[in-house]
Length: 431
Image (cartoon, rainbow, N blue to C red; front, side):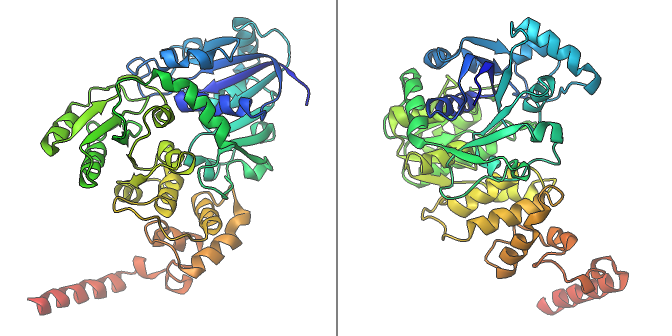
């Protein structure tokens, strides 16, 4: 493999830095004469979020790179998650960024997250023709690509690097382009996380750890699930809890959470430094990790062997819209492989079949070849109805939906009248 003049590693959060650094340590990335870290902070309000790329614990990680650049500064005043270059502007933008970052005319390779959304897609579009090495740091990478990706981007993908969050299961991300999926060795990832661990201070040993979810656009929506996680830890007998807010969270005060912890008699420690959660695993070895469906919950179980408790997947799974929302894959996999609050791992099932059915129902136009696998899995009936709503199965003509010959019933006025009469009769009889 020919060495690149410059390898640009694009990261959107602390976990991305760990994954990319671990891939390099494991020899999964090509050699390059110059390796540059490009920080693309896609937090809802980057200016309000803590500057995670300046945390002291990252000094050793930054030493792996010849330079650290900011995508946010380069495209200001646009938001990294919302801006994509216009096709006619791409040649001019590439020349601009090459000059701005001192790349010259040499060969460039990109190491980035899934290029199906900004900011990774924007960077991939600017550097037309640059080979892409895609990494995925979370369970969403096991799901399908988000829509039909431009072949001018998809055919440039050389590999998909991932953590082995669900042992034995292969991510489907970008599989339609034939990109091979390669697992990053757990030892390499843990070694990199251990380098950041000294930055973790003031964390009680053996406490329960609550992993914060990515902030929502809805005011107050952040507090409710986190409060339930603290209550779950208390019900499991833990009176010391550490709360690790999501790196994108604009507020790390957690006032409401502190009040709930006080009511429960729980000693709550809120981390002020946005270090990767895996650094906490190395530094304090939590007695229990509580979360919803975040990557940190999967790494705790699969890579560190820590006891975990999955809390609060039911509500978001039932309300998630549209159906092909990328978080659906993470929520379903969490319910399928991680123990709930009561403990005890779920019964091992056909995870390959589950993933195929999930990918096809989410993105049938992207992975049409998975229909047969989806039909086989759904016909077996060993799945939760919340994972595959009947309406979706009916629309796709899959097992578990309303039979095609009866599909007219929901739209039939006569059928609805009969249903209303039956319901009224049941109420009358029940009185």
